[in-house]
Image (cartoon, rainbow, N blue to C red; front, side, top):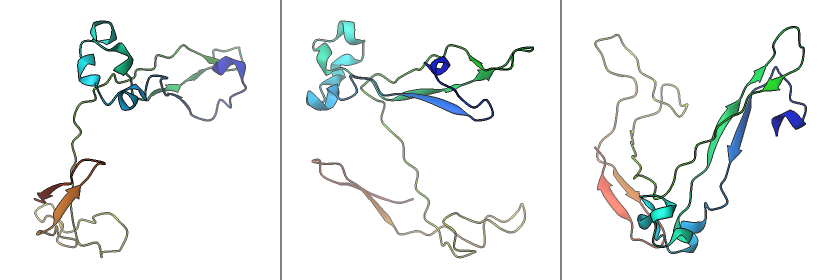
Length: 138
């Protein structure tokens, strides 16, 4: 519990929770599609799990007190199956300066003339043991 340890009130803290059932979908051949209506309604509840979650801990000092008190926090976790993820890729010429991010330029009527986007690339995503998925970049 946060109140059981000394925490510096000038710093920021975050409580992270990794549920004990997080590995269940992997150990049970990802049968978690049955878990969409909750563990109680699943045909194989042992196949259901949750992802990692977290919440910030807030130090509250109420005068005249000089020590922190921490309010209760609620940590939400995502039940599986997880929703499909979305991925955006932007390929550009990084040379103004070379810094790993796109540096725009020009005025409000010009779209990044210094480091323009580049076309003709192919993105390949792969997961094991499935076959790679290849899509042309747009």
